[in-house]
Length: 79
Picture 1: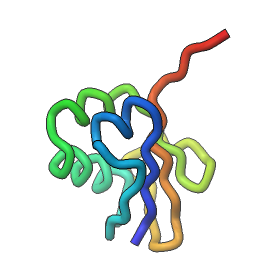
Picture 2: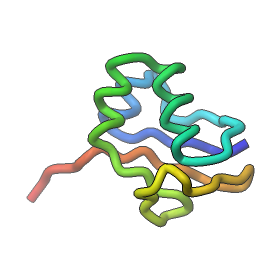
Picture 3: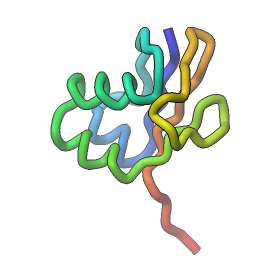
Picture 4: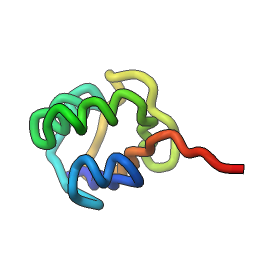
């Protein structure tokens, strides 16, 4: 199962810091997270970057394996 880590607004919307899921692709991940965590999480997820083992995943077809870690990162502001 892939490890999913949530940060900032994503963690707040999901009400968890991490989860494990048996998923095949980034697209599957988006669907499963939306079903599991609801409409508010879906709204936040739409603004998030997804990093697979530290590399940004922009294509829903990116495959995932049991050893992968996916970080769900909302935009950060600062200066």
